[in-house]
Each structure stands twice: as structure tokens, then as C-alpha cells.
Length: 625
Image (tube, rainbow, N blue to C red; front, side):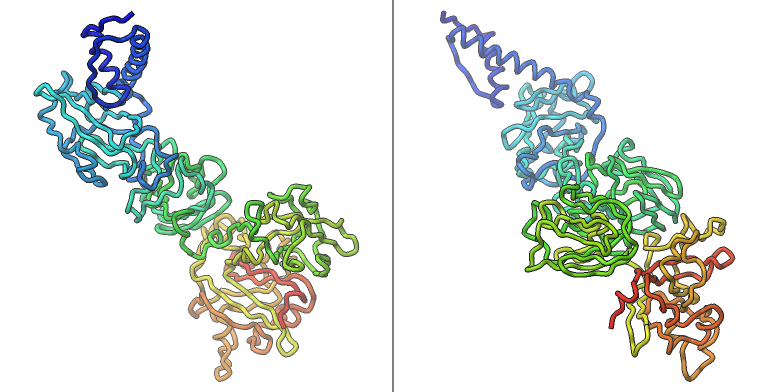
């Protein structure tokens, strides 16, 4: 049957065709088969149904927050597979706003004269988005979304008071940047989770560490600056971050994910986000959290409560500030994805307390958790190495290549022989403890730089022990390597969580040489050691003025950075009075020793309080010629 199409059916069909094909075309038809007409009308009905659903989309409750400002929804740098499906807008009814990021050839909605537009009874404006739908009676503040089309531009159409249509276009193919907060005539672009990148050219304070489209940096360390005048985040609302605007303490002790950090207004520090969606900060005992799982953006320059984001993975290296947590990070020596970097040397630290590896299961490493000898001799790759708890050693691959498994034997059968995997089919990473062997470095991952404020080298000079000492504690913080030995009865306020909080160098700060076994006391390393020295050691000896070789130098200036050599031949006589012994006697027995930098104060001292601790050394193994 070939029916004749009347004008009414013809009008509806043309309207439907226009919407489906996203363009206006003229169709002149006189006849059409009934089957074809039925099919076209089905398409038309389906499209008109979608059209009507889109009309009320701007009332959706999910569009009531504005989201991020200043981040890029998409641009030509955006991966084509990551271009957002929808764009979000707010109707502002402010028509003369030109886009900051696009010129007039790509965005001309600011050229529409609002006086020529038909207003609805409630003062709103009807906007038709070609190829998507019609929004009835939009008023200032209404938010709506449109689907990204296949064309370069999206056309907005308005009713004219002259009976025709007024149109403007906005470039939406992402070859030009669409930036949250940018305005195109009365249309302001919103984020609402669609942001990809920082705004183009906005390098100062606008680098996105991660967001829901880019979670590669999830869990990586983040550097922040503590600001006492807290602000609300531009990206994380009250549901995502309870650290919000307000007055915070000018100085505080912050605890986050196992770290304790002393801060004042302006202090920068680096923290490791927690494994959960939120990272909780305790600020003088009061908790607040920020969102760190990357489902909402973490952006350099954004302030979340008292924490101004300063840097992180993908946004430049965190600034060096002497913090221990900023220096020593895990380094993957090699794994199955990166076998090209197989190591030629491996460095380990021996521990009497063995742990199971995070990366090497039992079939790959038989060195497992358990108790190992405090001191022993191990044989590995034909080399006998005497080790004690905490001692580091290095092994070298025969012929420049480790076998799949490297065996460790223990002297006298103290414990069973065990092996670890060294062919890189499973990961070798610094910080991982495989049984008693902690990986600390390789030729591919240099051993972690220590951040002790006191470093020492023991050597023999003319048949006697001497110790070269380096001090540098001018800029240390509460997260340094220290001994928590504040007396719990001390309520003076100088201690928090077992450690002093004032690190200003003082003239009577002193160095003590202790056996490692003193760590096992209730208040470790808190009494007088056998050998000690003021930090002004190299200034108290003056052969021409022997009076300077007696008494204290507590009235002298604090020396925060210096180098000197502890030596019985140059030590002032009072260093050997009373219970104190010369260095030769203090180091008479082989074993483990440690130097500590202490403060000449405490709860009715002794106890003396620790400033920071040095690295353990072992006699005779660690003595340099």
C-alpha cells in the first residue's frame, strides 16, 4: 500500500528526523510505504521520549554542587578514551561573559542580546541544545548536563521576540580547553567529577596529583604546608573532607598514619596517605580527615582546612626539608615487569626478628618470620659474613647475575638454611624484610640516605680508636630518628609522646656513647654513658688557655652543625673524671654501640632526654682502617 502523507504526519516526521540527525534538513515527501513509515515513527517516538526526559534533567539533585574550579574538563591533551561523556553547566543569566580560554570563533554565546529573547512567565529562558534536548524556563543558578556529541561544536538555540530563533555555539570536541569555572555567555562550565587536568597554563598551584580519571598516583606521598588559617577546599566538600575553614593552632603536634610531626604556622611536611579513602590527621588530639583515594581531585595549590597541598607524585618532587619521611622511600630494585634492571649487588640489613616478605611468597622465599640469632656468621655465595642485629652487608652477583634463588647458611646450624628469590620474577624492593634480611639497596637502588642528625665513623689511628663525628640538627623536626625516653612524670610541656619538641641547638647539648643493650631499659639511653662529649668539643681545647679545658661550655652558643673527632689525646681532662672512661676503655669489648645526641635536661636529670640517635656500629666489623 502506498499512502499519501498528509501535512500533519509530514511535520512530525521532519521534526523527528531533525533530532535524530542533529541537523535541520528539508524533506519533501509525497508517498512512503507503510512499513517504512512505521519504522521511522518508532525511531521518532523513542527520540521524543529521550527528549522529554532531558527536559527535567536540570532539576536532578545530583547537580546541586558546583565541584572544582579552575581544572580542565578536557582539552587536546586529554586521552580520547577519557573524554567525558557529559558536560555540566550552570545557567547564570549573565550574557556578556566572554570565555577566558576560547576566542569568539569557538565560543560566541556572549554575543546574544538577552533583550531579544523570549522570557517565560516565570522569567526563565527556554534553551534548546541541538541534537540533545530542550530545557524549559532556565533561571539563574539552574544546573544541567548535556551529552558530548560527535560534532566539534554544540549549538544553543533560543526563541526570539521577533518570532525566529537566536543561536550561539560552544566548542565541545575538546580540541579547545573546557575549564571548570569558565563562562561562555550565560553558561558556566562545572566540574562535578569530570575534570581531567589542571587548567592550561595554570602551572602555579594548579597541578592535579590525582583524581577519579587518574589514580596512578594513589597512595603516593603528598607534601603539604600547615596554615593556621584554615580554608575550605575547592575540590573536597564537607562530606569528603572534615578539615575545613577555621582557626587552627599556631603550633601543634600532628599525628598521621604512624607519623608524629611538630608544626608551626608555615611548616611543610610529607605524609603517606592511609590505605582507606580518608587520611585522618590528629591536631593536638583533635581529628579531621581529607579524602586521599583520588575519587575527588587532590590539586597543588588547594587548601584543605589547614593543609595547603604543595606537591606529590606527578607534580614535581617534594621539597627537601630534612624530614626523615621525605628521604627514605621504597625503591623497587626489579620485578617481572622490569627485568632489564636486574641488580649486580644487593645490600641487606640483618634483623634477629624475621618477617614475611610483602612480595615474595613462601614458594619463592623460604626465609620467613621467626627468631634468628642476635649475632651469627652467615655464608652466602661462598662469602662468610659476621652479622649482628641491625648490621648491614652487601653481596655481589657471581659473573654479574644472581641465580633464581640465593641461599643463606647460618653458622653452627643455629637456624635452618633458607633462600630468597633474586631473579626478579617477584619483586625485590627496599624496605621489604625477607625473613631476617631487609633489602636496603642495590646498584639499581642506592641504599636509603639516612637522616640522622648525628653521623659517625669509627677508625683506628696509631693503634687507638677514634670517632669522626658530624652534627647537623639546625633544621630537624619531630619526625627525625630518635629515642622516646622522656619521663612519663614530666608535665613541664617540653615533651610530647615521649620526645622533646624544642630542637634549638644549645651550648650544653652533648654526645653519649652507649652499648646497644641500653636500649632495653625502661627509659632507654637516659643515664650517663661511659664516654661523652659536649657538642662544642672542638672549641673547648685551647693549649694556650688551659682553663678552657675544664668545666662546661653551657654558656657558649648552640652549635647546630659541626664536625670533629673524638680522641683520647684531645679530650679535656674532665671527660675522664668520676664514672667516665676514656674512649679506649669504653670500646674495649666487641659488640654493638651507638652515639646519641642528648639534651642536658630531663625530669630531675638523669634521665637525660634524647634529641636524635645515630646509626649503630659494630666492633670490630665496622672499624675503618
